[in-house]
Image 1 (cartoon, helix red, strand yellow):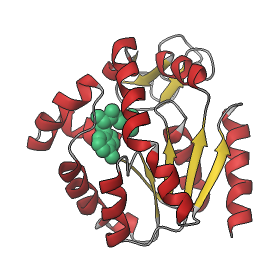
Image 2 (cartoon, protein in one colour; image 1 turned 180 degrees about the vertical axis):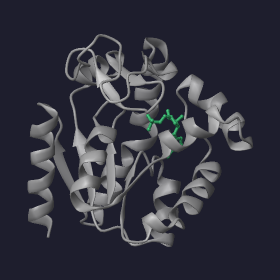
Image 3 (cartoon, rainbow, N blue to C red; image 1 turned 90 degrees about the horizontal axis):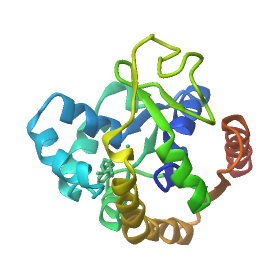
Amino acid sequence: MILLGAPGAGKGTQAKLIAKKFQLAHIATGDLLRDSVAKETTLGVQAKEYMDKGELVPDQLVIDMIKERLTQSDALNGYILDGFPRTLQQAEKMIEVEDVDVVLNIDVDFNLLLERLTGRRSCSRCGEVFHIKYNPPTTENICDKCGAQLTQRADDKEEVIRNRLETYNNQTKPLIQFYKQRNILKNIRGSGTIEEIFENIVSALEEFK
Ligand code: AMP
């Protein structure tokens, strides 16, 4: 399964819920890349330059990373891709490597995307994601799950956000058409509460079955 959507559409939040309900491995290229950046691996050092500017990491680097991730045992019984593919080249490569069953496109209004991204906070230790207005932690700036400090992602700053949204429009949005033509695309209304959006997804998947 593939989750498409602009930055801030709620891919990560929904992917975690879908993975749990359908017992799929959750594979998020953004998380894998941030992990490589934190560990200062060769890939991480190369990727950081692009991520800091809100640009896409070059296709080949991401494709190699995802191929390697798909060989891990938890991916063998099915997985949900969150943040991949993001370009036509990535999508074409993916089709060569694996059969894609369904692509969910989470559709969210531009203004709401901006609000979701600027208010997003994540835990510096366990990665749990909150929103100052839509999903606030019980104690301000403290993770409900592990008690560590919440931080704002470096690329959730306003200047970078604009670039990420533009990159999405130019490079990722065409994938909607790509998958529509292959009859595996399901559009999901991405406004509302986390639970409401998840319900939209579950009913779309039931229809698809
Ligand atoms: P995300 O957490 O999905 O918003 O991704 C954060 C950043 O990681 C993006 O702005 C890109 O710089 C990079 N990234 C994540 N996934 C991909 C991908 N499939 N292709 C290229 N760059 C990616």
